[in-house]
Length: 327
Image 1 (tube, one colour):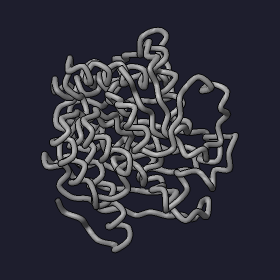
Image 2 (cartoon, rainbow, N blue to C red; image 1 turned 135 degrees about the horizontal axis):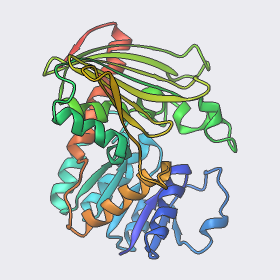
Image 3 (cartoon, one colour; image 1 turned 30 degrees about the horizontal axis):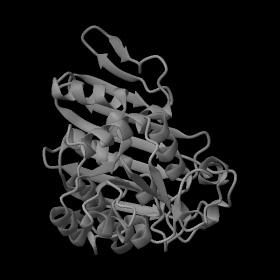
């Protein structure tokens, strides 16, 4: 299977190395040569600089790992050519060409997997099982908190020039750390309304570095999502409060915990031995290869990706206009 990887930043390199680990050798890169990464690990990989030249190699699958605002420039022609796509999150920085991508996939016949790797996290999967089993009763509130210090992400480059910090490339903390919008929707369904506030005071960037979002889902669950580029040390966790207990998940150790108030004790489920951050990406890629072979349906579809994009657009609108957004 020939696989094209579009973009050779940190996530493109990760996907390439994971494909190699899964035994894939027929790889091709589409890149601008503006990456700050060393070329040492890709001396044996053919490189093209235009999507037209890359598609001439007839790849069967394409991994979209270039900056957010450039996703659809690659994804639409790839879909028209019949390729199946692993689309890094978010789908795009706006909804303006999403319908064109949808039509291209239909006409080309390929399949798209939205790359929200936290769907593969064993701790969050355990949280979802507890919710499905009604283990903590009626849910009253949900809090997802994710803070990470952007200048420390890629020490080899100036964070101010990274896509995460640039308006023209679709950066900002809401787009870059949009995973909670996906995994909360996965657990609680469609949002009914939201209101948001954002700030860029912390790092003085042209994009927001802090966001607080209040959502209400159609089933009545209320949730708060906090995102920031500032917190040291980093923190990513989830708290769910119910009428019959509490659930906590921490990305630090991957554990999921459920409090049983009747017996006044916590049940804790930890990830399997050997689990690490890259396990999520490796399992996601293995799933994608099975999706391409039509052995499995995508666990996170284009429509799931579009739903998150609609939420992030609504966050920006609410923060800009100071309004409540209803869906």
